[in-house]
Length: 321
Image (cartoon, rainbow, N blue to C red; front, side):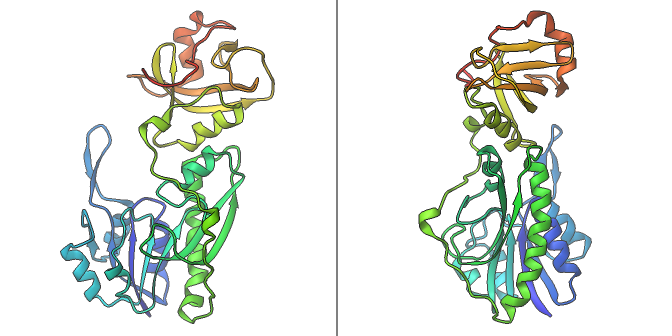
């Protein structure tokens, strides 16, 4: 059995860890994850999904706020592991730790590298309207997500996919690709492929200002922005003068000459709004400031009498003032 230190934090990482624990050829001797965080309106201190899996299987968990220079790092080095496997861990690994393992330190990254290095590759793939994404298994190096590639697997992005659904799919794809790759890596049967630096793009964590939707974009990209920020951190527009989160939209197969942000059509159960390039979207679920998420029907029951075709209800610049 090969000994493995696993590092990961969100739900994306949990099935990958679970598969390593269940596999007869591997022994997970330690798990590193981010410290417990306060979650929800009641700010309940909550362990990460990865910690929950490790605890269930009585595997020692390390949770340094910063790995570099910590006592935990020295303890991890002293474990003398064969492999380090990371998947959405959320911290840089010091080279001292990477170099301490007998075989390799590898990472399961949720993009088709060298595209979308960084912490939010799934968000950017959807927001940019990409037709596909995938996972890449790479060697860990000092530079972020820049290691040589050991394996890659692709997956389509549908018009219904959001960050939540893609994370679920990519987690399973990452799990399966990792399990296929590990034996070949251990046996020296893989020829690593260097990433093409000329094709590199980045996907830094989403900044607050990126949550605003530009209604001047084509309808397809407005909808992609909404899906690319769902279920977190959630896109918003300035609608009827207040910040309003857009939880669900749909592209409507029609065109309009109305200006972006104007009402195209309103019924008891439907609100169509103009976008850029003569496009139209249907707003299906939204959340006005200070209120719960609601269906468009419930929203229109409250304010529908004030809306009419041609009325500007979404600010053209889309930015909170």
